[in-house]
Image (cartoon, rainbow, N blue to C red; front, side):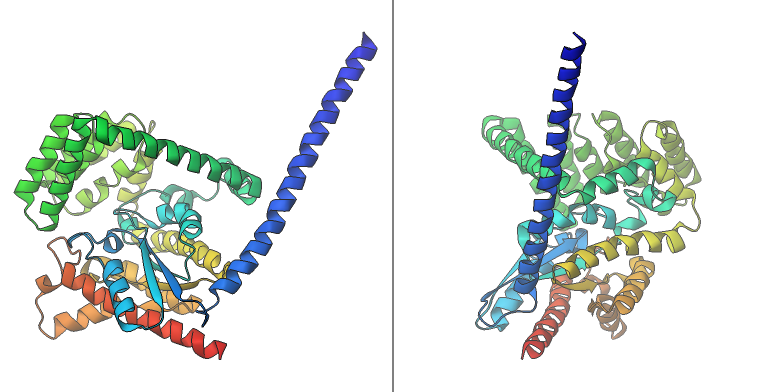
Length: 418
């Protein structure tokens, strides 16, 4: 019996050692493949080769890259693609927009590797940091440094095998979700109605027809009273008091903790002088801080008087530096923009301008161009909608600014190759 136990123990050790050796071997193979792949991608992306006829630009950012405020297809990325293909012979330009509204630098960073892998760009254009003023996702980690959990996460992300498993899991999950969405969109009439109402409400919001837009968002809520995103969308175009009730409702009906739902409280808090409203926001957040980390992060953001300076700067620039380092390793050109609405983003723009200069990154100074246009007498509403997003004309100015910088970088690459 004793010999049997020893024999069984030996077998388990053999299996364990064999598994460890296999995992180490696979990890080594992935790392070697990664080095070869990065070298190949670096060679492919180091400037625009004469024999290469396609040039892909990836745009990442928040609502200013999404194109909020303009009709669909009239944001700066779409207009940039048109400019490039109209004025450059012999090269086909493709501009890929991977922006999402309300996305701060940490959220962009979280998806950055996936964006690069799917787009395989020659150049990346980044406009980020504006949403960090009120979206607290990632703030706590930046403020408190690395916890045991974050250290373990970082170590896991250094393991190529872990990244591969996550990527495969994501792709499988995405395909499953796509299949479910496909079936739902054709089998469920309510879902089709929701899509129509949401699209109509967004169209009316962009045209500043807010009363009509509100009615369509209310129809979305009637279809599904437990839709947190519908309450948030309606709250954004409501007065302060009603907006707060809607934002609270979005969290109450949500079936899972979603940090993005808390992102609507800071702009409401900072843009009102109503002390009763401020206290109601804080009371709600304190009631949820033990349950939701996002609530705790938001409280720190609202009450930390130094947040808008030192910690905000450290947070944004840390995320940007990681994105820049990734692009440099892959020899992908990078351009940074600042925000056109200087009255809202002067602090963020100062960070971005300083960072671009320090890191020797080409900068598109949108703020300077729009400042000049307004100082010479142009009406602000020629370029901006009431919430300070650009309209179609404003995004055209942004596209022209980016176009000039893109061509400068491409021509500089050609001179270097020659």
